[in-house]
Length: 114
Length: 116
Image (cartoon, rainbow over all chains, first blue to last red; front, side):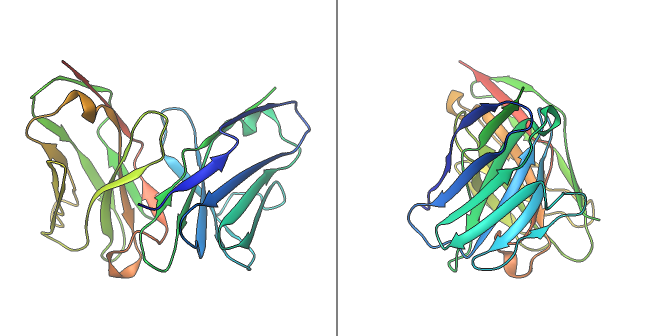
């Protein structure tokens, strides 16, 4: 089956620093990637949708200048949390879909901001 | 807007017990419905789906029927195993064609633990 990886799997950073999370489709070309955020014991909340070579479309209430998304190739999308603060601590999950249909999820990245 | 509500967990069962996890939804139009499973340390995996009313999705002994009249998509399994221990998410997509590559709206997830 299609495999999606995320790196890093967990990261701890100081308040005010920026953190980049990578999402890769390992064995298929991902025309669309989605970024989700999950709080403990809560649902996954869609943050943004990115299509390769285009600007990401952000969901209402998500700050585009804070959560920078780049989808420069058909196998890689990155999420950069800029000037991170403790309230940004969360579990970030990406998913990817290609022309064959289906949506495949990465294992997630745990971000802790001190 | 669209929303999905799952029964609150966690759910703890003995091996071979019957499982039901309730899921109801609110959506405009005719959404597709999905159950995803997340095993410890892994990403979400599609378990089953249904694209129209009265469709039954099934996989690995799990079943769910798309009930438009009750806006429900309850997950059932007749005899659970220890290996079924995971987090289960109900989700819907308003995208056409029954694909899951459109935007997904998730329920809050239900933790299932099965004891030997």
